[in-house]
Amino acid sequence: MQTSRVSQLIRDGVVLAYEEAGSGDPPLVFVHGVACHRGFWVSQLGHFARARRVIAVDLRGHGGSDAPEQRYTIAGFADDLAWTCMQLEVLRPVVVGHSLGGLIGLALAADPARISAVALIDSVLLPSAGRDGVVGELVAGLRSPDSERTLRDYFETFFGRDDDLARQAWILEQAIRTPPHVTSSVWEESLRSWDDEEALRRCQVPALYLDAGTANADLARARQLCPQLAIGRTIGSGHFSPLEVPQQVNPMLERFLTMRVDR
Image (cartoon, rainbow, N blue to C red; front, top):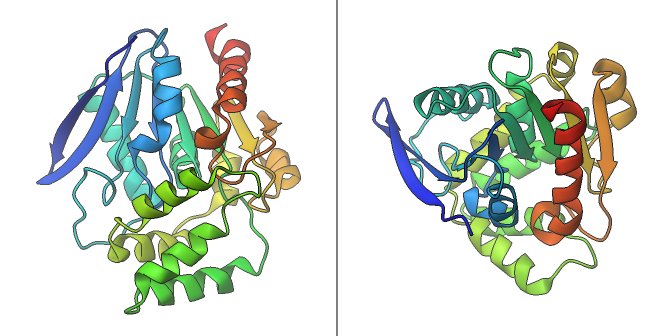
């Protein structure tokens, strides 16, 4: 069994935490969603470290990384991720991202010299027009005195009817540890400074989307913009499929690697 190593890098005075295990190419870099952390990949790290080098990061503002007062943009997270890979000599990894993490990987996918492939797991792509209002209300709530309740209420909408109740409670307790100045900025910037349509058009690497059956993405349109996008779907879970149904997620990731990356 592989033993992971938890370490830190310091970029311009900001601590960026990560966990690493295994060996073998291409390396896999796992990127969590908003208000989550590297621990959300526990079922993937142990599995994939048997044959590959795996790294799970704590994004700036999350987990064991520092949370300075600043804007939290997808472009900024992507720049941190590229810098981390450079420091660790992780060459052309496959970026596997859940939710926000998938968008961060997609932001790097225009440059095949940086990453070799990207997998997005239930990321928000080309959402319906009503999302702007939902996110606006969420940001306002996160900047109110009742930010913790706002985040709990929003995260509770992510769960499926068959999801494990103890796991749901754990996810909610982890989520509220993320400072509200971080979460509010992430969601605000997802409207203000992120263009998923352009990112899909510019994607130059093999891409996978694992749908959890939520209303997060217009996958038909996404495939028009990114013809190489492969699409899979899990069943029996809500948004947090890597935790809830790893027995489905891991084999689909393995198949994607075999078909599009390893050969």
